Length: 489
Image 1 (cartoon, rainbow, N blue to C red):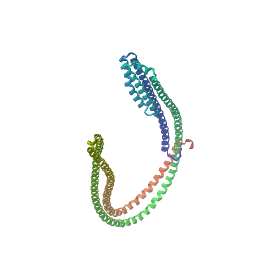
Image 2 (image 1 turned 120 degrees about the vertical axis):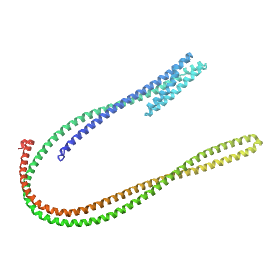
Image 3 (image 1 turned 180 degrees about the horizontal axis):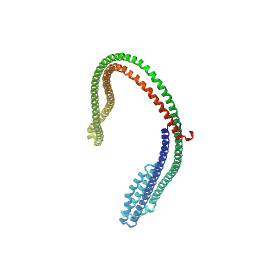
Image 4 (image 1 turned 90 degrees about the vertical axis):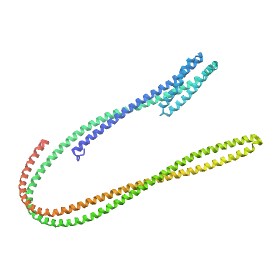
C-alpha cells in the first residue's frame, strides 16, 4: 500500500477491495443459478413440445382407428374417436406452434405437419362420407390404396424431425449449463481464496503501518516539546517588545479614525446611486411584464390558427369521402350505360335511340369521374398545405413559448437586481453607520492599549509557567515511546 495514505484510507481501501471480491463472487453465483434455472425451463419447454408432438400422432391414430371401425361396421359409435381427434388436433397444433415461436425451422416443420394432418383428415372424411352414402367398397379401395398410410408415414417422419431438433437443443443447453457451472465454481473458489489472502495481507500491512506512524508521532511530540520550550523563552522577550509596539499602535488608531470618517462620506454617495438603480430596475420589471402579456396574446392567436387548420383538414377529409361516393356512382352509371347500350343493340332498330341516350350517359359518367379525380388532387394539395401550415404554426408556437420563458427569466432577473440593489442600499447605510461607530471605537481602543501594556507583563509571567508545562510534555512523550517501542528506550 502507498505509505502516503492515511490509516483511514488504507482501512477503507482494504474493505473496498474485499467488498469487490465478494460482489464478483456474488455476481458469478447469481449468473450460475440463473443459467441453471434457464436450463430447467428449457428442459420443461422441450418436454412440452415432445408431449404435444406425441399427442398429435396419438390423435391422428385415434382418428384413423375410428374411421376403420366405422368402415368395417357402419356403426356411428365408432366415429367418436374421429370426432374427438378432429376437435383436438387444431388445439394441439396451435399450442405446438406457440411453443416453437422462436424457432423458424420448427415452425416450418409444424407447417408441414399441419398440411399432412389436413390431407389425412380429408382422406378420412372422404371414406367416411362414401360409407355413409352406401359406397363401402369404394371407401375400402381408398384405404387399400395406401394414400392414408402415406400421409401417416410422412407425418411420423416430420414429428420425428421435430423431436430430434428439440433433443439436440436440449443437449446444447445442458452443455452450456455445465460449462457455466464449472466456470462459476472455479471463480467462486479462486475468488474466496484471493479475498482471504488479501484480507490477511491487508491486516498485517495496516497493523505494521499503524505501529510505524505511532512511533513517528511520538518522535514529533518530543521534538515539539523541545520547540515549545524554546518558544516559551522567546515569548518572554517578545512581551517586552510588545510594550514598545503599543505606542505605535496608538498613532495608527488615530489615523484610522480619520479614514473612517472619509469612508462614511463615500458610503452615503453610494447609497444615493443605489436608490436610483433600484428605481430603474423596477421600471424594467413593468416593461418585461407587459411584454409577457403580449406574447401570451400571440400564443392564443397561434392556438386558434392551429385549431382552424385542423378543422379545415377534417372538412377536406369529409369532402374526400363524398368524392368517393360520387366516383363510385360514376362507375356504376358507366357500367349501367354500357349494359344499356348492349341491350339496345340487341333490340335492333327500336333500341337505337335508347343506345344514343345510354352513350351520352356514359360520356357524362366519364366526365364526372375525371372531375372527381381533379377535385381529389386539389383536396390532397389542400391537405398537404394544411399539414405544412400546422407544422409551421406549431414551430411558431414553440418559438413563442421559448420567448415567453426567456421573458419570464428576464423578469426574474430584473426582480433579483431590484432586490440586490435594495440589499446593497441597506448594506451601504450599515457601512456608513459602522464607520461612524468605528471612529468612536478607535478612541476606546486607544484607552485599551494602555491596559494591553499591563497585560504584557502578565504574559511574561505566564511564559515561565508554559516552560514548566513543556518540560512535563517531554516526559510524557518519553513514556509513550516506551509503550510503542520498548526496545528503542
